[in-house]
Amino acid sequence: MSSLLWEDPREEPGSNLRRRRPGRVHVRCAKPLNPPLQRRPKKVGGTRTWLRIDCTGGSELVDVGKQSIMRMTGLSARDLRILDPMLSYPSSITAREGAIVVNLESVKGVVTACNFWLLNPKDPGVLPFVAELQRRAKDHHESNNPEVVRDEANDGAEEVGKDKLKNSPFEFVALETCLETVCNCLDYEAASMEKEAYPVLDKLTSKISRRKLDRVRHIKGRLVALTARVQKVRDLIERLLEDSDDMAEMYLMKKLMLLQQDGSSCVSSLTDDENDNQDEQGQEGERRDYENGETLGMKGSISTSALSYRHQPEVGELEMILEPYLVQAEGALNKLSTLKEYVDDTEDYVNIMMDDKQNKLLKMGIMISTATLMMTFVIIVAGIFGMNIHIPLFLPPNPTINNWLYTAVGCIASSTVMYIATIAWYKHKRLV
Image (cartoon, rainbow, N blue to C red; front, side, top):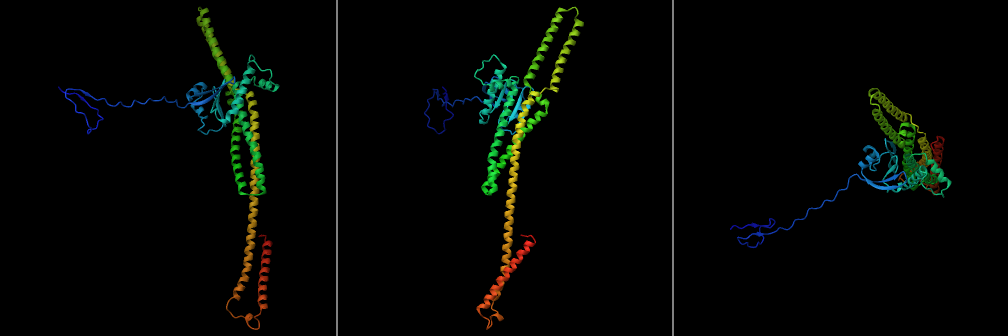
């Protein structure tokens, strides 16, 4: 009887195996292999944390992807790329068919007719903006809904603010909050820089030191960066005010209402056509032509009104919102321009002082060089007297101390006279 053997393939050939008896089946179970690793579900790529603030002032943190935001706001991937914090896009306010893309300093979000989608809501720089937008959205909702119970303890200032927001759509409330937050932040930074820069510049004019110069250099670098930021915001607002079509695209609520009116009018026209066809079947040809012409006329009038609204928009409300912030940005820019001029004047004054000190050093160098030249004559005379030569001055009866004194005093006096004459000639020629 043949034997059936099953061996573990992982056994080494030289291992001590037990003798197997013929006629039996020996089965050795291999060690169980490691179970397959369980794959963890991958996170959906491109998801980010957004803060959704609705028109009632409520907020909610939502983790959604780019495709979801594009579907909810109607934006394209190129528009959302403006809000990418990894890319350095300049400040911009872009109006699209159903949303407004806001990229102002740290405020990056999307404004729709009923919601505001804020990117990076955990940034400490946007916390004041979130609180202010929630407060204004709540006031806007209460002012437009009289059935909402109001607190009777509100003072007159709050009531005036609510009356101001009564006729403004939500997108304008959100846009105004963005502009106000950014402009106030830039204005505050400009005022802080003024308080810091002027004392440092005044101290630098009194006494120049390396530490003060380094501090002024840092202030000038910050000043240039802040001026560029304010200039971008100012140019952005000015460009919006000059383009009426862009401002007309920001009326999201009006465009939504116009679209709803277009849809309801089309439905009503189709219903009237069906009723007329059922009531007057005998005069189908003539009546149908008439009704089709009337329907086409209604559609044409609606499209004509929409086109006239787009080509001749009424943007007075948005202009009134943008103009104060343009003035505020220009005021901050004027402050920074004045400070920059003061810094330039201080630099000119420091350069003049340094040039004056350099001129004094050069003058001193010329005088010392001239004095050295005149003393050279005395050294030459001393060198001549020190030589081993025979001159009548040293022969008897002349070798006395008086002769030496007369010679030394004469050399010094002649060098001094020559030095004074040379300096007088320098001054006459205006060299020193």
